[in-house]
Image (tube, rainbow, N blue to C red; front, top):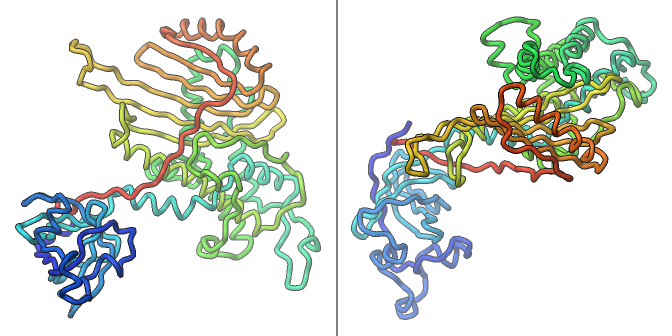
Length: 460
């Protein structure tokens, strides 16, 4: 972290009173160049300028460097600062301090001058935001990508056409054996529509099975690989990487060449890439359409990897914001993931999952000695074909559980309402106290994460 010595910032005499930075800089930010007589009514002293900023002596505030107007000999510079929504021109001997347009600094009023106390640096979330911004436009839905990937098991892949040839002139060729094995291993580990039967929630094997599906979803790929280095570790993200490696080897290409490919993206994910849940769209059946080329499949796989990485980074952003500016209780950790699963017809579908953990709160809002207990919240969205889209919101606080089901089809709404008594009994059999259980028509309100550049003081 950098530690900036206090630097004096002088206010040139005769500049205009502070004005909002939205005004043109040539009219508000520089000293007036009119005659003395014309300037007298509007010119302001340094004290008046700082008073108009409502900045008391020895008070500190944040300022953004809107413009570096003139840097003289690398030491002195004229800076246009945005302070509390107003522009202010200052002269400063910044020395070796590296300042750039857009930087944030902490300043303190010292009499009729400002002191540059410290430069602020982007918080870790800003780095995550940059990584997200690079990948957001290039995401491929996992179910749509898997449908194309499964189709290659029977269709194969076409080689890239030679110059002057049409793409259709190249006949499909079987997958490389390493790519086929990686795809088959990937498919064998996916949940299926009949993996969990009604009433199986009380079986000992069910929690372990669900935990395995979540751990192999790709969300924890790097941490799992660090703990258990293995070339064949079962994991969706790592399995996609193995398919990519096999296809690159067949082409005689390198990872650097793969990184330069433009991923194939899904249009729906470009509209609101950090929305949960995403609108559900049924992908094309596996094997439909012409066999893709090797290059097309590599670009599709790149988009799928981006989707998993976006979920990883999105989870980090939400967890970093836990206990932040939002009013009310905030989750201490959040996981957002897409879990592909297979229908009985072996068609890929998607379960969108969001898991939030709320910590214990030692401060009781009432004056009793009791504390708020830790809470888990689960949101699950999936499309069950005939039943249509279903959304589940579940909250667990110690042994008390509440759940709400959203159904888009009227027929599904009736069926779910008929099953609610049996669901209540199943939850009670697990030793849970059911506090609320209902079903509604429609969809829950989506949440959208907005990326922000939050700052921390590098001297802290």
